Image (cartoon, rainbow, N blue to C red; front, side, top):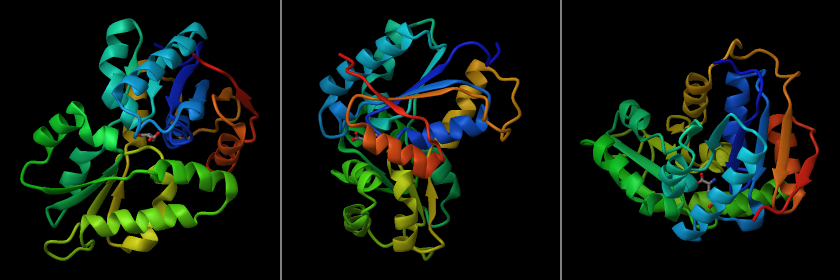
Length: 274
Ligand code: DGL
């Protein structure tokens, strides 16, 4: 298969999936993408499975009607709640999901103690429980549901005021235990929500240089490349690739985040997707 002809659809509850889109554009620089931020129906993490399932199907229908050749669910919460049902409903379409990078974190940890920050929905899901059962082994895992953090990151992108994001990062990391490279300390932190990489500089400042911070963006991009194929050299310039940015909420957050974090000036379309 080739990456020519046909966009790849990517969606998240908001701007978080841009962290995955960034990795996808680096891995597949000539690939066209349609990105949907479902900000009008966010946050997903605190709204329950039925809502996330319904929204994931509505967005998948819209993207499939646009002719996408693959779908990337750039949201841990939506992957946990909906990926199996999306795959069952669209068996011919490659559908790639994102889940917390537990396996690499377990492999990286020297202290045998890792932390996972994610939404309440992700941590409560059967999919995450089974990941934990199969991957944690003897590693101790501190789980932290981060209510409000994705929302705060959305707000920070729009206003440039990161104080709420920083306060929540401080509160949640303190609740997990001591971070560091000494025995008994958490030396590896998994960002199990695609919004959180946009807070990683604040997390780094709070936790110090020796703590490893891992997310899933690059692994998702590599998996997408394996499934859709590509003639591109990773890292080539993406200047000729098309990108549509769509939001179901207010365009300002997506516009600002795409500019700040991906250096994109593409204008954002506002759509209602039911
Ligand atoms: N970005 C999403 C994730 O990866 C969820 C954020 C939200 O709660 O809407 O889980």
